Image (tube, rainbow, N blue to C red; front, side):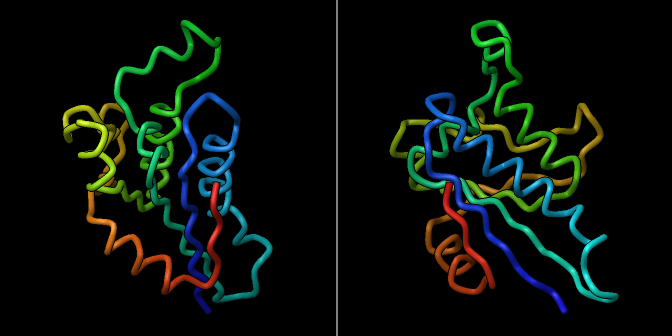
Amino acid sequence: MKKKIAFVIKSLPYNRETSRLGLTHAIASQSVDVYLDEGDMIEPVVCFIGDGVLNCLKDQQCMKHYNNTSMETHIKNALLVDLQVYICKEDIERFGLTKDDIVTDAQEIGADKIAEIVPFDKIQGIMEEVDHLQFF
């Protein structure tokens, strides 16, 4: 049996630990298979919406200013472990950002997965079809 879980990140980065917590839970959800019955699977997906798309900015200077790894690095790690990541197109445009401003890959660390910039309608569809929906 496959359980689909969506982790929807809509919080600003660095103001609280909410965004990091959501992404950490999504990454960790892939390791729960040791607790599942034979044949059961977890299929996590991460969606960045609203202010949450600001977590996806490239060239974050978090280590310099906060002595902490950046959400950029965290997103790259999510892609490295093959998490499906969606970023809301309308919210990127609302902030005046382009695809070049956003982390969409982690090829430099060996990740094959690519984050997708998609319309909110696609994210809404994902949220409607999952078994569990969590907002961060």
